[in-house]
Structures are given as C-alpha cells and as structure tokens.
Amino acid sequence: MNGHQTAYIHFCHTLLQQSAESMLRGEGFKITTEESEADVAITDNIEQARNFTAPSVVFVSSGAQTPILPEKVFHLTRHFTGDDIRVVLTRGRQDYLPAQ
Image 1: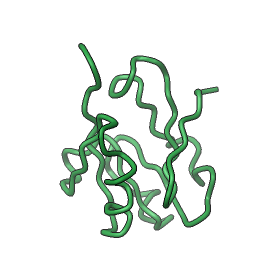
Image 2: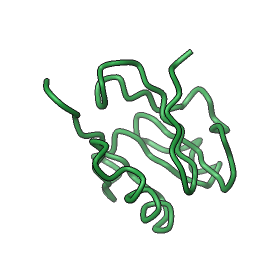
Image 3: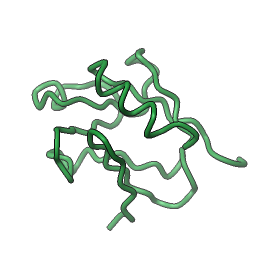
C-alpha cells in the first residue's frame, strides 16, 4: 500500500455531500451515493444514523464538534495514513483527532 487508499463515503443529503466534496478533495476520499459501496455513511438524521447499514456512521449537525454517536466514529486506519486517525466531519470543516 502506498499513498492514500480511498474511503467510500455515502452522504444522505446533497448539501452535506457538496460541502464535504470541497473539504475532502485531495484527501484520499471518494464520495459515493451507493450505500452498498460506502465505508462510512454520514447523515444529519439521528434515527437514520442509528439504522444505517454502512460499516460506520457519523452523525453530523450544524455546529456540532463531536458526533452524537461516539461508538460509531469512523476510524480511517486502513483508508488514510496507517495511523489510527479519527475523523469528525461537521458542516463547513473537518477535524482530525488522534484516537483515544
């Protein structure tokens, strides 16, 4: 494995996807609308997040700094750098936080 691997991300809402595409450009992510291909699903609907079938789900909301479902934070270990990086996606920005 050299360089970044692609993580497929499913966004449940067009506005989330559009905002994330600019945040994630060049970061080794691929945006997908096919849930079956997604490594992580991102939604701002708490009920949808609880029931999503993607391996990992991050719940995001406007202004939120941490996911509401911390047990479902997406770990990018195999997809990003080889280090255990926790990615918290919020509208308008992206935070990289070392996993605890």
